Amino acid sequence: MRALGYFRADAPTLIGETSKSQKEFESEFHDYCYINMHQPVESFGDIETSDNGDQSAYERLLSYIRDSKMEFLVTVPDASHLGNDLETVARAFLALENMGCKVACQDDDLPDPLQNALVALGPAGASRTRSEKIRMSMQNRALRGKGLGRPPFGYRNGEDGTLEIVKDEAPVVELIFRLYTKDMMGMRLIVQHLNERRITTRRGGNWNVVSIRDILKNTVYIGTYTRFGLRLPGSHEAIIPRETFREAQDIVRERRPIGRVSQSEPYLLSGIAFCESCGNKMMGVTRRQLWRNKDGNRSRATYRYYQCQSRNNQSVCGYHTWREADLEGAVLAQIPLAIETRALRRLTSRDQAQESEQALKKIWEERVKNAERRFSQTLRKTASGAVNTDQLERALAELDKARVLAEKSDQPADVGDMIEKWSERDFDEKRDFLLTHVARVEVSDHMARIVA
Image (tube, rainbow, N blue to C red; front, side, top):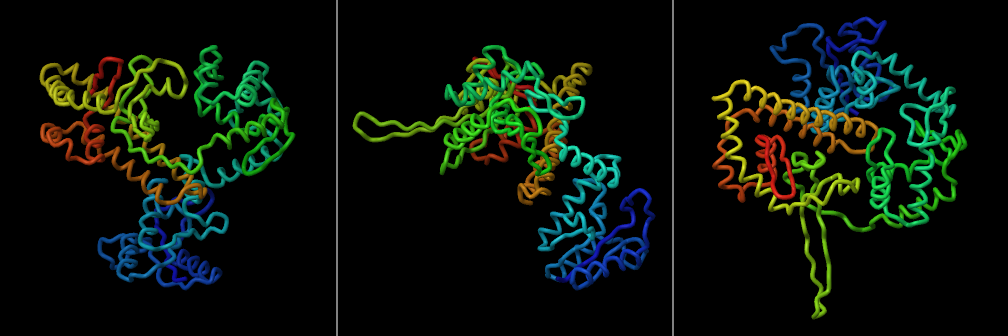
């Protein structure tokens, strides 16, 4: 395959290594091509100055690919030559991939750029050598059945590192499996049962559907430890008999919907509407009903509404429910006055305005942090092959949008024109407008109040 080499002078070096000259980088590129049977075409580096104007080596690389209108293998010594942080590496990787090129590191152990980046650039201040030692140590512990990280509910890490049963928690695990397999309760009913009996999680919180599902599917409860792709049966004492666990897995498979793909439209107020009673988010819920009329004909209807997430996922709080159109209409009607009040505060009360601005700034900082967190999670999933690069690209786009909207949130806008032509706007335009001008929506049974 036709190959291009790329390297940069300011890429960080590993501990104990010295910086290399351009000739050394070029020599390594040619050696890599020879060993892997690639055709070396050109290399791009900005270590030694040359008559290239103001273009960087990376810009010259992109220009060369565009002008050639050909597909290449782009090789780098390691991922740090694509950027100093994970986000920059991901952007450079996607830019090259979108031009039809493949990207590879000249690293026999970690040729994939994203995997290489997670090792070389993952933890701030951690060297690749140290990261590798930590990984090997964790694998050795896993091979011996030693617990890594936070132990699952029902267990603790013993003095020798193996999992030990927690006497107060094990009966709860047994209860969950009994309710699911013997009493045939669904996961939501189990959540409701535990929360109503005031049986709490390890941290003293309420149970939710996800935590119940994770317990029912975790082989740790039959004494099998799983980590780094390893399965070690009998590594610790079991809480649940294998027959009960297999029965639970059969029920999970039987209850899983087959052949039905949800096509529900997203909800405009997702992530910004909160239940006033418990402080949890209001989540969009879609219900489809099918019934037979007296004349024998079938009818169907779809209902969309917002409901307290605590009620839906944890079976606590109340049925604080709003129809989608009603809640969104109530929010839209308040926006002009809220923005006008916000501007008035700036003119009349400096202290009150600063306090309000600081509160809004924290909300927007949290939104950006959440987008950064989702990008990091997606990057790891992409590197492991769990998702494709399209999802990584979407995560970066969402991060960019969060940053742009955070900057725009303090800028004036033609609110009247937007609201007047609301029905003509598409979902993305409406969503961007709400995220820019509405920090939070407090929802009670009879009213909704926005914080702008």
